[in-house]
Amino acid sequence: MCGIAGILSLDGKPVLREELGWMCDAIAHRGPDDEGYYWRSNIGLGMRRLSIIDLSTGHQPVGNEDGSVWVVFNGEIYNFKELRGGLEQRGHRFYTATDTETIVHLYEEHGARCVEEMSGMFSFALWDERRKQLLLARDRLGIKPLYYAEIGGRLLFASELKSLLELPEVERALNWRAVSHLFSFLYTPSSESIIHDVHKLEPGNILIASPGRPVRTERYWNLEFKPEYGKTEDYFVEGLRGLLEQSVRSHLVSDVPLGAFLSGGIDSSTVVATAARMTPNPLKTFSIGFPEAEFNELKYARQVAKKFKTDHVELVLEPDVLRVIDDLAWHLDEPFGDSSAIPTYMVSKLASEHVTVVLSGDGGDELFAGYQKYLVEEKERRYGLVPAPVRRIFGALSGAMPEGMKGRNFLRHFSLDGAERYLDASTVFRTEEKRKLFRPEVFELISDHAPWLALAEHLGKEGAPRLSALQYLDLKSYLPLDILTKVDRMSMAHSLEARVPLLDHKLVEFAASIPPELQLRNGTTKYILKRAMTGILPDEIIRRPKHGFAVPLGRWFRGKLGPFVRDLLFSQQSRRRAMFSTDYIEQLLRLNESGRDLDLQLWSLISFELWCRTFLDQAGRHAARKLAGTASRVS
Image (tube, rainbow, N blue to C red; front, side):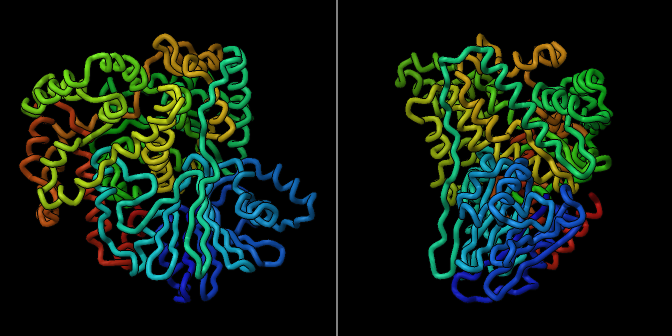
């Protein structure tokens, strides 16, 4: 696991060696064990390494036999031994035992299509000296991040946005489209960042760049839901069990201590149950809980840990956890409205004190239809039986009701059409609320951007069953932009590698072949997964309702953290930004204090303000490097 960064000159402007150093220093937390560089006048590749496989000879960059191809790599290729065997038979010579070296030889055989041979999580940058061509690639599901920008005749890229901000040509200017998306859905868009002109390479995509030619991106993989209606339930149950075992076994390969996150939900419990049978010593597991009973899942985690005899460690979080809030802003890299980043940060810190690699159960809700919102959407389809003009009348009535009035949100929600209604349930600040939240001149900048439109296109896929379309939407947006972003940043904040066995692409493709009727059956979510784990997991774990990784922030904001929120959002520093209506923020705080949990709305504002202080208000690379050093020491 590593952090990568680099620069390609597209028009002859030189690449300075010290620039690569600045970029890699900013992501030292991603790889504290080693650093390495490949540098010529027109190209520079840099990396920071966290040693996981081949601890002694795994230094990067890694080249081919004649030094004409070089790569820096972040991630793990789980089928690298199989690939290496085939490459050696074709005459390729290896000088390390790493998965990284497999990439250069695969490239020699297949060119840019080498990514199609790889099974794993990855982002990498490969330089072909003969062709003067740079290849950037990102894994199929977006487990590992990669940012890039084409500015001033150069292509810049890095694992994290903060690396690009080390360079003077990257202007610290807000991307208003991303701001609008952030305050709608808690995160920035799939192809853009919060900084103007800086992009994300989307999952399942490659980027190809050469001096004197246009930079281009291509998609090499996309998930298709193709239900196999001719198969029996037992076929899917047995197939899933087999693929789970294969994936978990491949994810256990490590030359350093390994453990697993355990929430007590069915996904993490499935991973733990499978891994525990394959490890000779007790698997180490890690859990986070809260004093508030309705948020605390520790009893379920303990039940699973006891059954599979794991070496279990847990931590109960109190409101004083926000003492790490400045570190969260630094490591999240962009404003991020999902407050579950807090327990993810803390459980990663806990795990990092014992292991270097952890397995995570993320992805199960999207693959096996585990979200309650899928059940809600199924029930709400009957709203479509009411004629649209009648529903619009209800929408008009809701607009006349005061904010916070009981029934107002239901009437507005009822008035919407299918795709809009589903997305509305996941929206934090809707258009009318943004109009109140932002000052008029700022609202004008974001009002032309409609975050719903791009997402609604995923729901309109022709011929796709409704549930499959919802799963596809979440696999393209919520999973990579929220869940995987959170896990990557919060684990790497502590130099901890998080692996996601449920997102092995073969397992993902198999899940997409399960008919919707077997994913969501008679009100039971994850029907096939639950059948597959019956007799393996305790019945209570299988039957218990879905419980998100939630934080009692709304309650904390009404108590010990109330003064902190006010001091931050009404500070002179925040007011000088002149972005938000303080009257509307005051209204949100009063509603929260009256008992209505507005933790997502308030946390989005807090996260944005902290990010602005950390990145927009900093003078440049020297301040950023100082902050990075502070964050590393605290971690």
